[in-house]
Length: 213
Ligand code: DGP
Ligand code: NA
Ligand code: NA
Image 1 (spheres, rainbow, N blue to C red):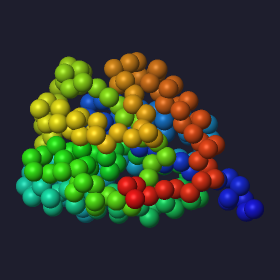
Image 2 (cartoon, protein in one colour):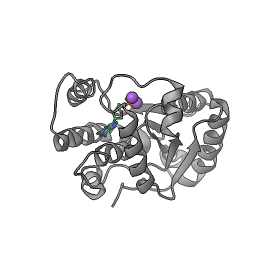
Image 3 (cartoon, rainbow, N blue to C red):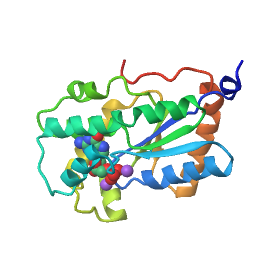
């Protein structure tokens, strides 16, 4: 057995949820934990606004440009696909990848719009590397709004976020961990950490699956 295969692959973790649930904080805390314990780790955030595709998305989210809803759905998906070669290479070489949002955001935010169904929304992301675990930070819209006011970006409106939450409920599967986002952030981190530690040894020598196939 080669050194590489003895080390095993990295694990793929996704954080999901409506806006203002503390995803980015938990993501960062988990990345820091991996680093301080000497684990190889990489942090991705979607949409990645730095690429050419990501710049169009950024402009759209800020309301500086208009894009047709199907077209923007495909751009968000393309923005994930363009990161896939990097993500799979990292995972194969034993580096764990922690993602702030992923394909589930893609489905939830588009299917929340009028005239879209979940089946259509899933299709462009079908085949992406499947996360070993998804942490869903659950927060009621009224609590999210009282935490900090929504900003000015396109989707940051209470009524829309309610619809997004409804789609997430439909998408939830057995490999999701629903986390009550209203608790103390350190407590949440401990729960996430222990779930990840338990998972690590189980997935290390297994194949990364493909999403929705
Ligand atoms: P964030 O950088 O996590 O605040 O995300 C920016 C906004 O974009 C947020 O309101 C969620 C939304 N979003 C994230 N991913 C997708 C996606 O794939 N499709 C759509 N339509 N919206 C998304
Ligand atoms: Na946001
Ligand atoms: Na993000």
